[in-house]
Image (cartoon, rainbow, N blue to C red; front, side, top):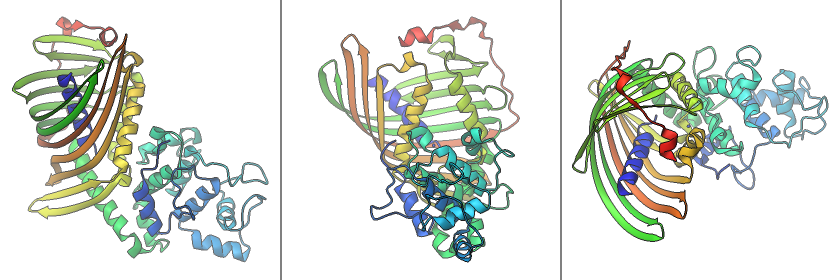
Length: 470
């Protein structure tokens, strides 16, 4: 069981460490930042992030994102804008009137706005896209708004967590502030500062974060966008303390593990399905494993420990489609991770720039929601009986960019993990574990215009992964 757990944790750590998307609120920091620039306000009960936003609240936020709050108040007082709705309070009326007069929103009927009804994620994301300059019916269709928004860097967080809450509203609004306008002239918050709608001094901490983060993304995109051909070295130091129960027997254990690896990865991201060739040598605990893997036309081919086998990715179409979509939009994710970044700094050393990021509590919530989403699209028989949760308590990254190219990344993290396995017929296991990890990835070389040369797959034995998992 220990080897299985070690492998599982290694995969989870690497996945969390090298990624640069209705539960209790996790975006408190984003709400705090938004409140400092007058964009997000609470009530006597605080920010109330754990409840759904109302249509009135969404209307207020939208007017602020247009930079029109003062104008809406002035025009409404002057009687130059109005609305026909009978269920809008006096405090909300200027916002609704401005949106109605400008054709940005409509009521639920000719005379009702349904102010207190919940605003769903799709409605709000459409509002954000309009604020960025996009038009539904022209640039995107209303029914496809969430998918279109993701291609522009707006990752609406309730798609992972469930019900759209004020927590999610704060997160996706924060993302929008760091996202380019449709005309590409600048990003949204910069345009609001430039127009005088947001105070420049109050916005300075957020604009500095956005611009530093965008510079890092530009370097990452220049290194890894399009087709990828990369040679890399990797090291990881892992410390684990475990309390495990297996079929009624409880044990405690701890372990330290140093893992080293080197290899090459080639990816072709164009086309209907991604193609991949991976060669890796991993050494840990006195053992060395050489693994080669290829992905082609929906088949996985593997060579490991003298065995060659292949299996069809049955039931994985949705996963592959989602993966391809994430790859396609990777160069446009200017704001997606911003609500999870606590601090980011950049320091120049010679021809290199060193970026240091610390992540806030929202990172842990996203990791758990992402795990749930990914496991949810895997074949049911492969995930039956497995319940997994992570609490990422501390996470930081350091990226080095040299001559405009990403050269290395290190990550440090501290996390708790709980896992329950029910294998049926009275066989079960549970695990509580604390894990600290330091991961380093060095990119020795990169290239583009990749061409993958595949070996002769005719002697690869086909295996039934469904039967193996059962």
